[in-house]
Length: 639
Image 1: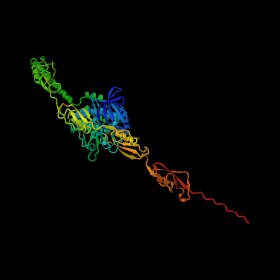
Image 2: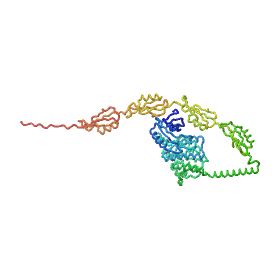
Image 3: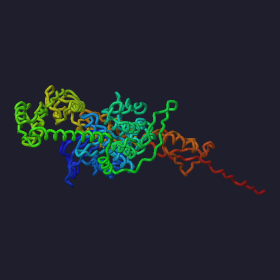
Image 4: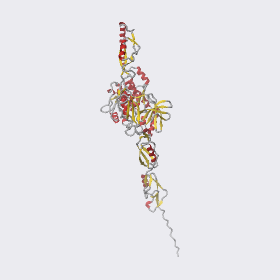
């Protein structure tokens, strides 16, 4: 669709944000309330599925009732013609997926903080009866103020229940993050969300998910059958307590995992507070002879600590003895400096009252600045720093700053502009847009404007040109603008049901589509009318695509058999096998042949006649003629 686009009178779509497996996400504006919103527009194949739409409406309404700081709020949902959409809170920030791609593994503490906030969101949803089913970095948003928000509650449930995805063997979610039970097509519950969050936590602290493979099937197989190496095997900075938590969340047996997201969150908070003990049951490796998993019984976890209080305790309580050791050394160092200064004050000339002013050397070359600071009786310490505002080799500032009074002989950091780090811009022409975006991000750049060229003869979505050009050097985070091939224009298939063949083919011709004709009997659709199309109504097609028109031949026709001489039961059975109904007339016909008594002697539809299935055939049965009457003997009078 061309932007800006009005989606009902209230919402206007301003710019495209992202495209996913179910929908496109746009930044929009709520004209009624005057606020920015995110609008998720479902793809047409889901909008055409009535069962999915019903589930989507139900689950979206349920998700809209979830109110929590860690859940992206759903404000509204609606429909414009065959387009369905939901209106959500617009989060100013990045997804965890983008952060992991650009930064790699996170510090264990930050990773635990994020997982704890996601657990809080899941706890609220689970208590409301909603299971997310698709927890992954792409559905976890990190707002600019540091808040963690989980999105797509309820929608995954509607998708999971759709006819397209619940056939035998179908699974939901991203293979990298779904649970063993989801990989096997079994029902998912809140423990499945715990497993998926365990995978995300594993990736946050190690920089990679626990299982990788050449295909989703290979990854799914590992979720079911392969053991997970502890995170500390890949990142030695992961503490033992966090190792235990992650491995417990990733247990393949749902009964051996955390049974609730709240239990998961409690253990994460214990790690954040430096408790060092994991109160929930720890998983013991499987016993070799049985393959079973043993649990170490422990005391029940303490009552839930509100996040605000937990943070307050976290700030007030020392996380380990390290703070005490560092503080002690800092105190000793401070005392040493004070003793040194006191000694110099008592024994050295001018120390204590001899101060100088830090000269202003901003804009000087490094050599000139060092001479000026040295001449003032200070010790210059050059420090390089990237800068786009100063010429390389000139002074940006000093620490302490210019004109500040300091003791003679003090050290002064001279911050000198260094060369901005440059990266080689990769060649992107000929790549698919998704591959180009991935290469841009992995090389340290970011995606700029994407323009479509409708006249290109290349495959749709292929990169035609770029700016900056390939091979040039540019600073990190530089936006790279792309021009891609637009390919043939897409059209939406109209509803052709109930039209004649001529009317339907005329419309398809106007849409530059090709058609094929198939016929079938349908007792409910008049012969010559369109029953349905393949693909269905609302499908997005390109010029030249083929549409199959299924045309009704009306009810199926059958030949009426000869029923003469048949009993009622035999005639009824014969007609039923042909899809016809037997009607026995009340009037019977006299027959002289005793073999035709109580049998069919006449039928309303002549044998060999073609009639529609379901038609009635009336028959008359034979009956014996009345007995003959005898005259009395004639009496002759005697002569």
